[in-house]
Image (tube, rainbow, N blue to C red):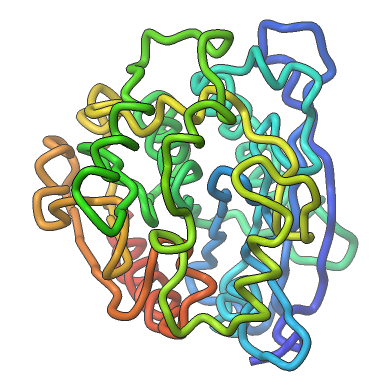
Length: 336
């Protein structure tokens, strides 16, 4: 597995102003990773991946001096899948001018628009010169934490994908683990705002002050110290400095995503296959109950990865998760 598994990498900004009822422009930053056409799976599959709060699309393509194998994009391209990572509005290189006004519905609509535009370019063969048209292309949406939340909302409201995977997000109640029950409850109380809360009423900084420990829920004990420091040294979730995979901004609407039943309505509308994947120490208090949120989905899988905390792609067991995503996607996509 190496960068040679990627034949071309394209950075782009996709205009989504048409679906956002705020003064524009509004653009979603995306990075497309393309394997050689002759190595594509049949049918061809594109994975669209969005990051968690405080992270950017580069979470899916990390590199650290002295360490190998931290690029999920490379992994999937090596298996013959197209991989597209993107930043939500208010995150990373996407538009941030209306950071405090964006709602989860805005983020979902923007992401849906961006995905559909890129899919059309890939299917028509107009994304980049020399890359064949892929009219039979299938599309899979994955998202980590906040990205998992928005991916499920996208699917429920817009039917964006042929299958979806939420990685480290609970469709029932997302709760950050802590070392004792009192600290868990403190975090729950700080984030239990509900869908009715307006972004102007929410504060990432204030709510995060009630989280006693971010390292324990985010990183398993065997994460190398230099990698841990690369992630957390600039602060979290309010980063004073940010590595390439970290975002200096987090939309305030993210605070309420940890409310109980936050995506109840959208989850109930999803009909495509769903994968709910968690680390051994993660945000679902009862992983095996997650399928109960998806009353209409024809296929719901749960996967718990050992020796993994909430930030999956830093874990020593990350390849176990990536392999499952790959096999699951190819299995369920044949039913489309």
